[in-house]
Image 1 (spheres, helix red, strand yellow):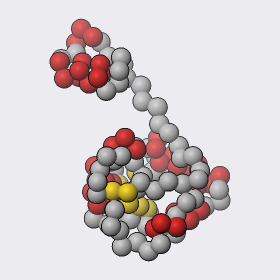
Image 2 (cartoon, helix red, strand yellow):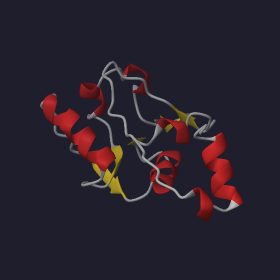
Image 3 (cartoon, one colour):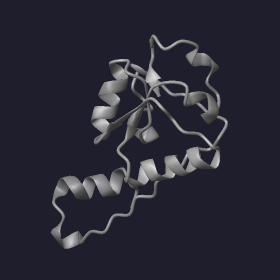
Length: 122
């Protein structure tokens, strides 16, 4: 994703992972599940991104993108409705992340229970 009115040149021409590495990238820190899978994709395509800003949290990555510091990589559902951001669609399938939740129904308060019922549709 990038800022909707980004100053990055030729952003509309990005359609592949090979083109995206020519831009400043705002990525999760190395060693996280998201980043490891992305690094494997870069490696499979013999790509070494040079201009990378490593950030610890998704919120900080989104803020950096909104400040037009580069192209960010976060979970799609967190930014799909954000009117300040534009999703960049690539030909390659980007890595996905599975989330597993373990919980004890007897110990849940109302807020987490509602989240599980409504958002996760359990």
